[in-house]
Image (cartoon, rainbow, N blue to C red; front, side, top):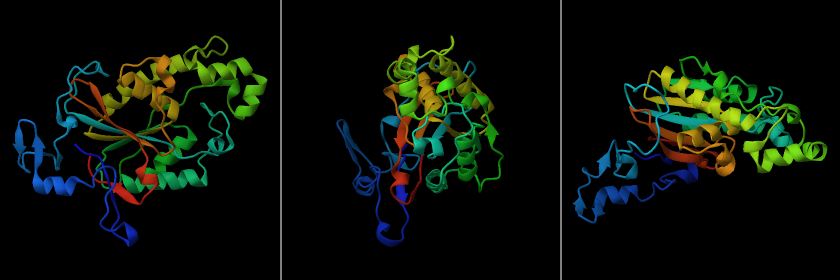
Length: 283
């Protein structure tokens, strides 16, 4: 399956494609060459896209995210909330609800809405914290189904650092701030290890989503740290790999989940929709 961006056909965008889709028309006309022979155009397509590695069975590649079998395969599309006021000010956010979506963040959420408008999502799960909640409300505004808010999608609790500018936190709590930035697995406040707890929340979030998902295509809107933890837990990485993955404001990640509950990462931190007007036309 292929995830690409198809720009609108107005102005200078007319007739253009991005995200690796530019060669598809030519390949579809000529067929796809393989070492063992030539596939016809029809044989090389799967669900409207070219045959790729994503078409291959990935059973056993990762551990199941849920204890019971799923009735159907799922596609989970994850979106990080738009730029918040504290993102802009360089403050530590954590689980605080005082940081709200900025004007730029609202624009980013609107771009996500447009980019995902052709996809037939059946549900949207979101964090109840303001910046993610507002992002989800913008993205989901033209859909009939109600938003589903999950506490398991809340951001990590960073305790006394929350609300401080990064420069202030570094000056007032140098050891604590350095631990959070450089060794998050061992970051500890008053006997609590926020990043380690986040891994438990991420596992709970996966189970909540996959247990409650009634359709095959699901949207999730949350925060960078919890999304990082969800990505890492899905790929079998522990809290020591917390900073191995990054997701921009308005960035999109895509997972396929087979009926055994085993995940495969399809796309990481897609941001083309924030740079050009267009829609993701296929998953």
